Image (cartoon, rainbow, N blue to C red; front, side, top):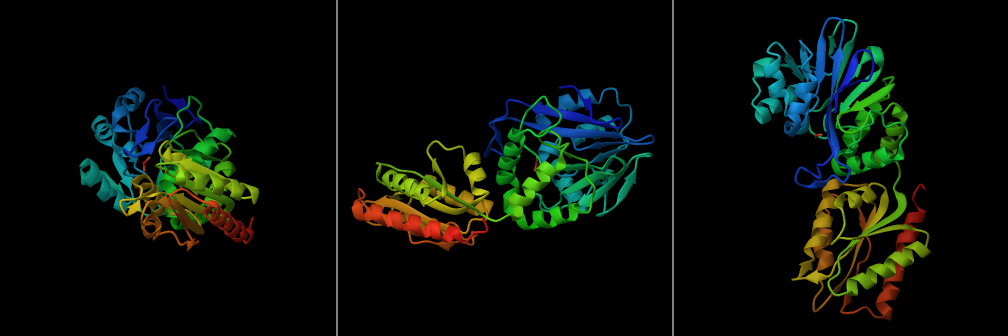
Amino acid sequence: MDKRPLSDRVTWMGAVDWHRRLFDSLIPLPEGTSYNAYLVQGDQKTALLDAVDPTMSEVLLAQLDDIAHVDYVVAHHAEQDHSGTIPLVLERYPGARVLATPKGKGMLVDLLHLDPDRIDAVADGDRVSLGDRTLEFIHAPWVHWPETMLSYLIEEKTLFTCDLFGSHFATSSLSAGVDGRIVRSAKRYYAEIMMPFRKPLERNLDRLSAYEVARIAPSHGPVWDEPELILGAYRDWVSGPAHNEAVVPFVSMHGSTRALVDRLVAALATRGVEVHPFDLTVTDLGDLAMALVDAATVVIGSPTVLGGAHPQAAYAATLANALRPKTLYASVVGSYGWAPGAAKALVAAIPALRVEVLDPVLVQGKPRAADFAAIDNLADTIAERHQQLAL
Ligand code: FEO
């Protein structure tokens, strides 16, 4: 992909990674991703904002071929998908200075072995003049690493946010426009990357409300020319009330836990609860993470295996615990052969979730009428609890 202008003085650079399907050896990328860098050219100085994943260094370096001079390389975030090509950029431009937060400076040295003498630590609120363009740096710790910062291009009211407001979405379009697919992809990104940091996000969103923002340029996915679209979505995901929704990740070995889950799904739907079942043997974990963003309740379906939860269910519980969604209620349903153990193990796996644990439904063998009645009772309880939500 060639570089393309965002304005007279700002150029989108970077690489679209159409075919990448896994990030951090963990996160599925069904829609690929992009690593966006931006070149800001004032009438006196030039800054490159972020770089690209080292697997695509050649793309960025080719885009820089006709750029004779770069004064600053702004490293918003030390993670390698944005910083990994900085060493090569510094080789190309021996006079360039790297600008990062103080913590970012240390991390760039540790992760990339950058020469610390080439890195200037910038304070929160510091400005750097490029002549007729000015960048202001906004420290934004914990979105999603501790060293992160944003840049605000004052004269163009453009906010460069690196991971924040990003989406893993490969596209030939520069702008997200009002494309609902991009918002959905951004929600998936939020769920997988940002959701564990809702408190710092809340603080940072409050802080950003002081800035007049005409455009948000993240370092993954297209640019938000309608910034309120993504700002409003983030406000809801981060701070909005939990929704009248239940997520039911489950795994079943011989059909008994599946029968309980099927009954629960039907019972919740009948009671007006929006329900999202996920068969963990075939689920894309990003879809599950996305469903966790809004749901008030999580019910995990698991048989008891070797005295504990099925490993697939244990993994889902561990994931939910790590992602820290705004879930309010949790429970477990499942079948066991001779002794129950799944519920205790699964509840123990979610200490970070501040949930009320609703009575699990644990069934010996194949469910009987009384077991289905217990499932109906659990559905009644969930529906009643959800009536108290600010819907
Ligand atoms: Fe896109 Fe946290 O790196």
